[in-house]
Length: 499
Image (cartoon, rainbow, N blue to C red; front, side, top):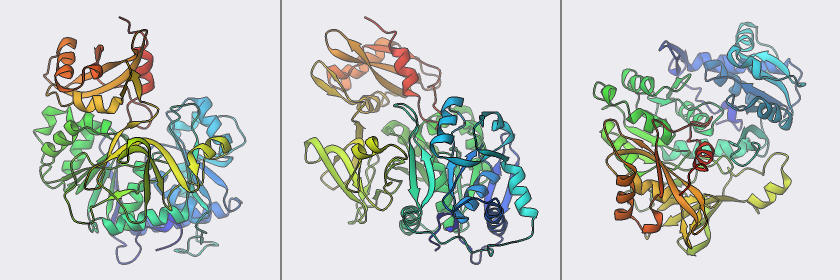
């Protein structure tokens, strides 16, 4: 395998195997073979070479999911440049901040988002036109199939965090770290040659990027929605007979609500369901297991700063408990620090995938990246067998009358109610208790609940201090740009609650 992250896709003996099935919002599908992808990515790398960009220069991508987006990203890395995917759902001022912060010299945009490019110094180019032009030009310079040889510590990509606490921070991903990630994931995963993996997360999110690279490296076919729609996601999974489906928990929760459609579709061919990038509840995993009866449903953990590779199967072959994240991989170091016991605390992690620090943020880097360790901010617990479980975020924890409350624990408890599809718990200031829990609830289709019933359920199944003093019902949860629940929007809404 190449030492260039843009060149990890399989090349030998699978030229005409489908590499990508692109599904447009209106349902049209376009197929791309491995041969076409390799030609187009190499051609785009050559096109970039003629653009006069120095090795390591940053190229921004401000575009929806598309074949051009994927091919451009591979070509950028093959040319020895750094790809910077940008969340087009961010405010214009934040997008301008990212372009300046990453020192983007060339910005690739699609027609839909060209107006968000701002008026900075970056050269703006239409991504579809550029990929098409590169495809039609004769080879020149770099020999096809020979991506730039990269040092392990050279940047391949810069992903920007969601910015829940201020402006988004750039996280550099290195070629060495992420070639290792892809190789290791391929080694511990079942063979995937010729099989199909469905994803719909946006390509500025690690969930989609890593899934695409992994599937490509194993000779599998990526099935990609250009835009997430719960009904289309389910229809495509069944119609295109996908072997694996992956999404963030909120996307799965929306799909689970399509009860009329679920009864019409056959998902018996789905062998693997992977939920990741955000905490998941046992209730959601149970619903997914019911929808996909022959699939292994698993819960995966990772961060932009430390990568998607942390946990795997138990070395003694023990069955992984449903809510567990798995057992630490041999090549990944972990410690639980500052907790109530040796088996619970904040997770520190060290591996080849850990970022060297935040881009242009020395103070924040010093506090979160310590001697090669990344301080995750995630509270974990470890059971007697060594399996790890997510408890909550250090910065989400609040104190109610002297008792520590992790919202995630309360949400898991509430979602065990047969009438609750989703629950989000937010802290509300209180003169007596300090802070008290409030709950936003989305009911399952056909269910009808009152706030009193929700509170009574919580009082019966958890310590009294965890029960939500305020309950508000929503038709659906607000989503942030990464398709995760927008907790900031809910926290602002919760400020109106009062006794």
